[in-house]
Length: 102
Image (tube, rainbow, N blue to C red; front, side, top):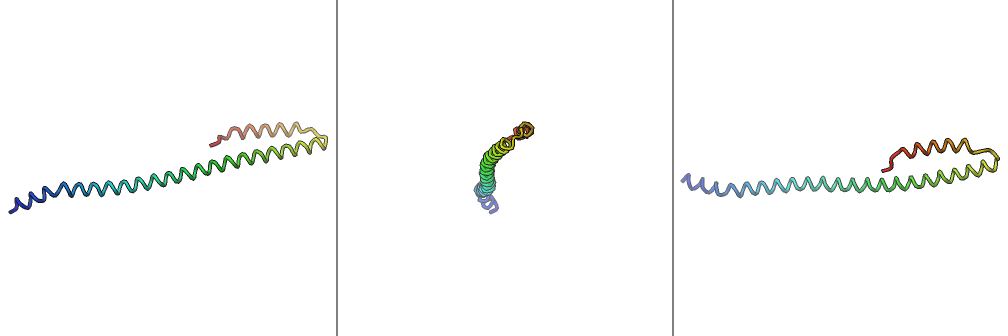
């Protein structure tokens, strides 16, 4: 009698083992897929931030150029020489060029 019961459980064990492996595989796939989706969302957000920063840099450069032109017009109207101010601005521009853009 014991031989009949043991042979039935031995034939049933590969099916149980396969079912357990499928369940473990699905659980692992779920967590890997979830992490991948979160990473993709973070990358998309970072790309959006980079684009916005580039736009801000362009706007700031336009604003600085407009202010420089307004200052030059004021100095020409006043009759003073803008040479010392231009030297300090060139030094500031050199420092800005050292900062890497993303």
